[in-house]
Amino acid sequence: MKLDISPLLKKEADFLSYEFTYEQPDVDYYGDVIVCNGPVQVNGNVRKIGDQLFLETQIQVNITTHCARCLEAVEQAIEAQSFEELLPAGNEKEIEPEGDVCFYEGFHLDLLQHAQEQMMIQLPVKTLCRENCEGICSLCGQSREQGECDCLDREKNEKEPDPRLAQLRDWLEKANE
Image (tube, rainbow, N blue to C red; front, side, top):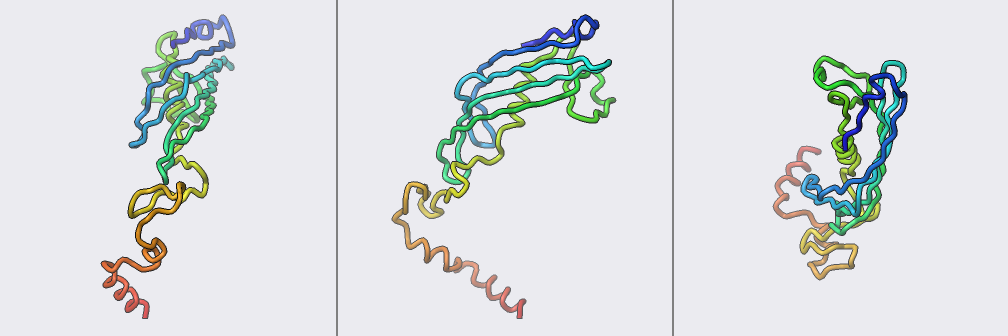
C-alpha cells in the first residue's frame, strides 16, 4: 500500500488519512511461530506541521503464539501506535534524528512496509499463558499446568543437589570458612 503524499509536499493539503488491512503470513520469531488470526488493521494520518511531515499510525491484530514456559498456545491482541517524522530517502546517513523517523521515496510512502515493521516491534519478547505458569517438568516434559507427572519424586529431585556438583559444593564450603 503506497500513499501519495504529493499534496502535502506541494502544499496543496495539510492532512492525509489512510486505512487498510493486509494479510500477514506466519512469522518465525526467534524459534516461535506467530500466527495472525485475521487481517492486520492499519489506520492513521500524515500531517504537515510547518515544513515538516509527521506520520501517525495505529495497528491492531490478534495473534497466536506460545507460552515461554509450558508451550501452550496463547491468543492475544496486539495494538500499536507510532508517531514519526517523515524524511526523504537518500540522506539517511547524514541525518541525526531527534526522534523516530520514517523515510519516503519521491512522492510515495510505503505504508505496508511501515506497518509490518511496527507490528514486529510490538511483538512480545516473552509470552506467558498466566503470570504464575509453572512450565513443564524438567524430567519428562509434561506441562505442570495439566497436573502432576509420574516422574521420580519431584520434591526429592528439587531438594537434593545434583551429585555431579558435589565437588563444587565442597569447594564453596571451604572457600566460605
